[in-house]
Amino acid sequence: MKWFLRSLEVSILILASSLGPRDSIAQAGQLLASAPPQVVRDPEAALIGAFRTHSLVLLGEVHGSAEMHAFMRAFISSPEFGRVVDDIVLEATNVRYQSLLDRYIAGDSVPRDSLRLVWRNSTQLMLWDSPLYEELVETIRDANRKLSAGHKMRVLTSDPPIDWGAVNTPSDFPKSYGYRDWQTTEVIEREVLARNHRALVIFGEAHIGRTSPRADSAPVPAERESVGEALARKHPGVAYVVHTVVGSASPQLEAVVRDLAAPNTLVPIAGTSLANRNSSLLFGKSITLFRNINGHRTAVTVNADAMPPLGAVIDAILYLGPYSQDIKPEASLYLDEPQYLAEVRRRIAILSQVYGGDFWTDELNAIIKRR
Picture 1 (tube, rainbow, N blue to C red):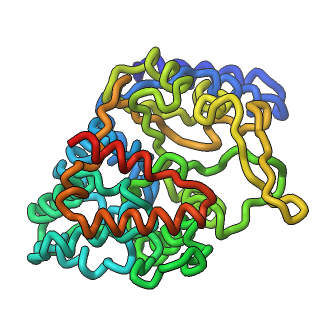
Picture 2: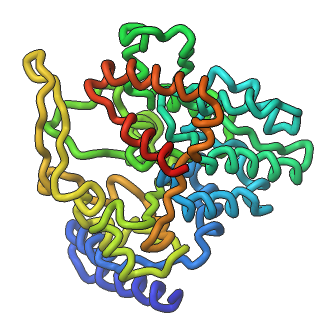
């Protein structure tokens, strides 16, 4: 494979030298962009390698995926990870509890009921109640025990500092918390970039892309940018963006990657034909966005022809296989803790009014019925 790539480079140089000065670079670039993606069979080593040229690796998390979390736990537990990475930024955490989480990750004794507040008291409901997230935090703590005293990893919280004890009506829920990526961007800038650290950022797929489909050319307000968009605008080149494919959440992209790669591989796409493919592979053939038009929230459909190329959105695809086991919260978590169950229902009632719909009750009832 190395021989093939070297031959391709030589061919491009020969082609460029035979063309006029104005055309040579453009045509040589077109030939490079037609190269097929090369599959990396050791994704952990490849991601460690990305930290040599980037301060951040943004890893798109498929929430609740057993395969996704198995990969992350193995990656974080590897000796090389602890030697290279300073921080891990988790979506599933409230910044109000940073000092508590610091103590736990450092090895201090923290009661389990107190530790759970880190992810239970976030702006999101039930999602982080899956046992996978507590297991992930425990994995990081265990990995830290094996590191030298001079280099311990830190887990950075990133969700807005909501105090649910002070939220009793929809008007008590801060409007800025509806778009919460700004909080994560601030944490990354202050705790990672300003300290010249390197961090793995584990966040949902919708938050990490450098750009997204646009209803028009109007820029996204800064407070509504995703983490990936904000970093690309303010700190271009600082982040290596990895989209995860497991199962068929993105069926078109999954079909393309399945033909290229075996499970548990990485597919870098920069400079390849895949980077030039339309990002409808990722977003679907159309997507509905909401824009404020003449003071009214209006639904606008964006079709594939208005979507950016895939290479403008991500740098690589982590392929974990065609099937995914979705690990939901356990029914006992709610049934054995009636006070917490009542609190979840109270928050649902509030947020249903904030967002204009109940997106949680059916899911909660389905979890409880599985007992």
